Image 1 (cartoon, protein in one colour):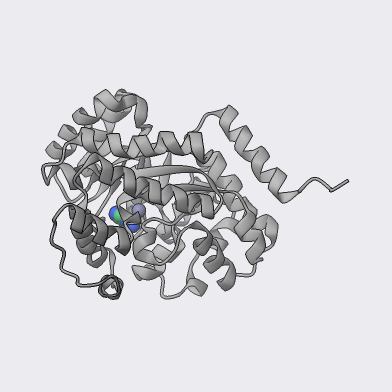
Image 2: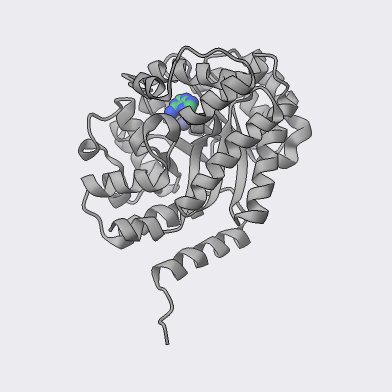
Length: 337
Ligand code: ADE
Ligand code: ZN
């Protein structure tokens, strides 16, 4: 099963680029940019990665991002993640970035996107990894700041496929950003939102009805509303689930109690993703392995996560067909004769 999972081509749809900042690169950038960090060693950093909820993680995650100052830093961060994708057989990835985490510190929006985009372009040419970029608004900040961020994104419309909503979910409901999302939709962006990670199932329904999202990030608390589950099945609304993240942030007490396989078997379009792999102890292969270790699944069921992710991705139909062919070829290697 390990070999099957390693070899399976994967599609990632829920990945925060700031969440791929490994302790090694954190130290390197802190030195290069002369930024002081409250850790003496990489081991000390890793020891600090013990979280009891989303907020305890976010506090450390935003602190880590302080070492990112220059275009080259954003390139290096993104390139390191893309090399990790190659190792895990991730052939297409849709990446979140949090511009407000950087613009609030005086880093230009254009600096952030230039570094990330340069790495994505290079990865397509050199690693054959395709990608899309999704701008996330920080939901703990106000509507006016989100509107200002959307304006900064307009000249980069060609590089950004969608807008999303992340950060502290509880107490920051979807309706807070209804007008910003309406403007983003008018401007031609698709929309997604984190919902039902820590927040209630009603945040999932409201993201669908008020923010018109094409998919839900996390969404595991949908099971608290049976009518919502029926809607997700009937309308085939994708959930980008992040198993190791959910364990690290105590959304589920253990992987055995995680509901992702139950959701898959009930016919939901669920996918496996890594969220913030540098903080949660694993990239895509690790997430697949962790789910498979706790839940017996057939190879077909495991591959279904990838087929669901292709259906849910923001690439064009032609590109989706190319991705499906790659997965099918990997599942049925041509006989040697
Ligand atoms: N930002 C980065 N990771 C996040 C998550 N899992 N939930 C909300 N905001 C995030
Ligand atoms: Zn996330």
